[in-house]
Length: 112
Length: 119
Image (cartoon, rainbow over all chains, first blue to last red; front, top):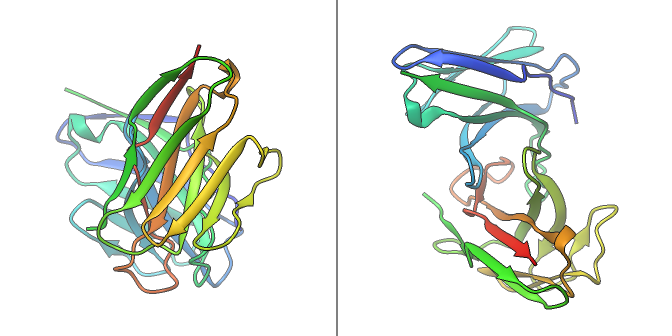
């Protein structure tokens, strides 16, 4: 699987947009980008995933560059409850029976 | 959406005893479940893949005789930590694939986790 690189930590003011980058320069054609987050002492939560087109759901937007070597997760109006560790994971589509491997992620701190 | 329930949420046990953690998919069937372990300030580490009706597949370095996994039905997988020791104290998390997404999508639903403290 392609390796991902994320900043260790980021800060964001409440109400502002949080933009979390992820570098996956070795991504291959059949690999999707997945984002999960883990709020302290809870299990991870799925946020969004995409292949090459930008995606949006009720939680966030995912912007993938045209060359697919990097992506950005956008939380449009961050709240204190969005403080969590955010994980960017690249996995091939079609391997539904295989686990997700987590890196160190980005610790997002939202403050008032 | 899909829900994965873990029980117990936290457990304290004496060294040498065994502890069982249950993982249930509440509204969907899961032929495959995954068990992770997380130490403080570290990321999740995959321990094993649990397949319904067959033996679990353990990651390198995980002792299969110490961490017994049983996946007897399509909605239940259990992890038993046998002869627990203080170094087994950790946050154990299970997950299963959410059925609502297309077959190839790696969208997993995670349980809330079980915190084990071995005295």
